[in-house]
Image (cartoon, rainbow, N blue to C red):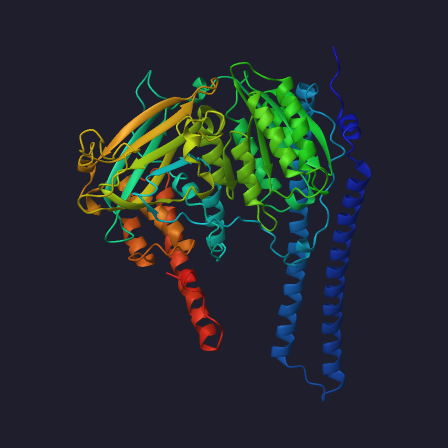
Length: 638
């Protein structure tokens, strides 16, 4: 039987050096000796001065020693001695903790090494943390990249009655917004993707019926809180749910950025902890691989069993940040491992975790997208997890997940890591419907104009709805998807169009359904292993609407509050009767059964943002008073 390595052999095999540890120990012993020597010297001087003081009192009456001064000096010396002893005790305690921690790490690492030698690959090429200006208190310039959205305009139903878009289940925009507000700043105008704010939260939509479509569809219609003369239409989708045991086998490849830009505590250390939380959810049927990239890419873990917690933990803990970034090379290796351990009929997914700082090597965006789309067709999806700020590339993270049939989330806290990788694991990993498209036709006889709130970069051409080759969004198990339209009712006798469902019938001269339906909702989707779409249709009747906003569900009002917040942050000029005061009132009326506290957290963000917006407005007004040019009309603060 193979004999377990000794501690000395293990340290040598893993490039640990005993000499630096010994030197460190000698240095600490030397420091303690100096502290004791200093303490003894202080006491000797103190007693010597005391003796001299007594002799001088007898020999020279002109020399007077004040009792208060002597007492103060005594107290000072005793204080210094106490501090020295305290430092000594603190150093001993710190050394003891370090020794205990090192012993535990060595024991755990030895056990992990014995169990996972066939999986863990030597990773001496991963650089140690490099010194950065931030470590010395120098604030680095912000180089975050957030794409500005051109908000959807108001469409005339008589001219363009049809609206088509792809669904979206990403949530990254809300998490990045939360971090900004907690750090005391508001996002730039137009950089918030409102659909990602809406879909961060779950809503109480009914589950789909068994043996039916993989998701249910819900609609709700009520007066708009943004404008007195308009209505708000909510469309909600809810995917069927699966328990952890029902997920099936998973082949997961973690593609981890360990470049120098990932050194801060909110990046690689948070990532390591987050992935440890994920690995706790895996089982023996799952396969896990880890690829890192930093200047050069390499394999850290190759197809380890999902229940080998020690191997997974050890592989994650040995990672260090350093070097520049060559993410595209890492992606190639990640997909190679995903193919190597491919599970037929299971979940095969690459999970990319980075701050999005792809800045070295072959990083042609079109080639990268082509690779991701090709692997998607082979059954390997891509999920992106964003970390940190300072050089964060939000736009890239969102687009990569979009092309890889995946989900984009931003991890700013451990709570968010738990939400994405534990509570919503099935939604994150398992796609239940792909290429989900929404098309709604408004009845010009009842609706004069409308606008879609959010989904600006998810718009599709009208003909794309029936084209199964046009890519669209995916919905995961248990996911909820929400979209909002603001619309205005037309007066009696609206426009007609023979080519439309709601136009005049040229044979009878009569309108079709125009007094019963305000719109006709259509959805197309494909099952994950199919390439032909299926069609769902739902008429939206005028008698579904309620007269007052307070008659709606908590979910309706909360979704309206979330979308209203996003529009305020984006400086939308379509809000005429809506501000932070009304937003706060609307939010508080819709908290409902907030099991995890996400809605209450949202309420706090609204209150903080209101203060920040007021402060910004005051600064702008002061600037204008000094002769600076005011903002254009569309940039006015609300």
